Image (cartoon, rainbow, N blue to C red):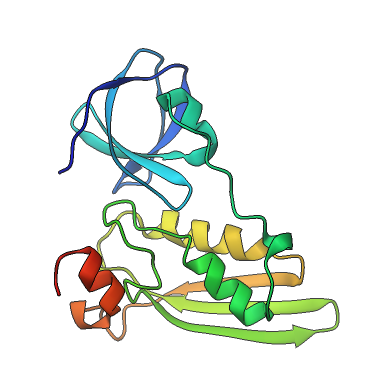
Length: 178
């Protein structure tokens, strides 16, 4: 695991334990290491555990506050915007977005009277991964923020099972597999 200098937490802030997804409060003065800063969140190592801290709480880690992508400023079709937002969702244990990891199997858009409905089928790198609900919620929250979208359904599926060959060449390169 990549470790850098110890950082002292500057104020109490919420974090999500990895892989359980349980919410905890990091106490001011706790000592942490940042292991990755991607997709508008920080993954930290604290007291023998990994946890994810939202980018909006970057100041608690003495780092920059990472702003979310503003969905209203995205250009292109709804489909293109959804895929762009999906590329901002990162597995907190692997420094690659869910699209390049090959976790998104389908993304369908259907029009209804009041806007667009988005249906996504995705998987996890392992069926027992405790971060599944956290990743699903992250995907749903980001896609739902698009002004044109009136409904989002994210189905977590395990057929076909994920395997490394589903990763993009970009992901394989990032992980030193090419």
